[in-house]
View 1 (cartoon, rainbow, N blue to C red):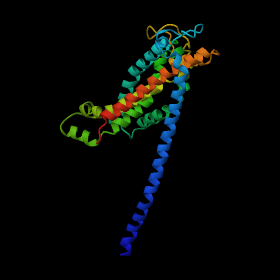
View 2 (view 1 turned 30 degrees about the horizontal axis):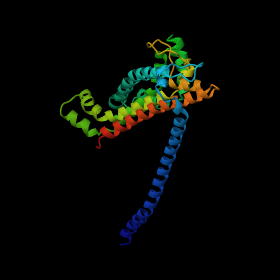
View 3 (view 1 turned 180 degrees about the vertical axis):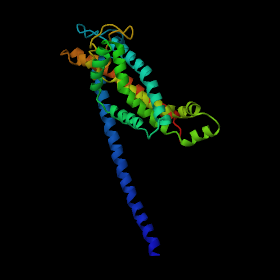
View 4 (view 1 turned 180 degrees about the horizontal axis):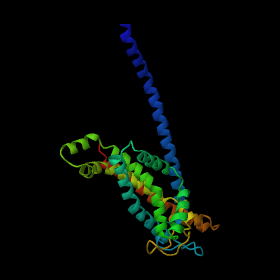
Length: 296
């Protein structure tokens, strides 16, 4: 009897001590979340209060100016950001998703080159953005002679977010149960038909969420564009992929570096616009995850 009751008593003692630890852990998690939300709320309140006088249609209808801060706008920065993000999505998302499909569904894990690819992707995801700016300056802008254009910025940012897209897409594909694949193959479908008709539709919510979050990171990057020589004050909208451009982070940097108080207010208003775009994209990612996520 002693042999039977000793393990049971140990389990009972462990179960008695577990709720207290779980309760403390939940309190720590909720406190961390509350602190993060508090700082976010403080930031939003501060920039909205500072930029409220300039939050009107003039802000996105006019071009930037260093002579008339009262009527200056950020239209070129908004259009430049949209150009960069649009081209980045076109180049990075298909490439990243196809790479994830290969690594998860086709790659032989025993081959050394596949392991090397996975290792390099993990390492590239942690490389600072300024390094990608140096890469874009030396290879894309000068060696490939793309110049300081929209295409140079889009290719550089695509390389920046590509590892993140690959990792998030792989996690979404890996989350699909193996029984889905086995059932499809058992019914006579080919491997590509299984991937195209079963695996990809089931993993779309995770892929879309990771892709939107990766593009959200790209919107707020300023260091790569500084290395690429993007102009801080461009008074025209980009007319194509080979046109000069500016982005919102660079325009905010230019405004905040001016000594006049009007430029500080203008920079705060531009920050509100940038934060609104980021929060909108993150909200869409959360909605997609909650709306289409499947519980296996």
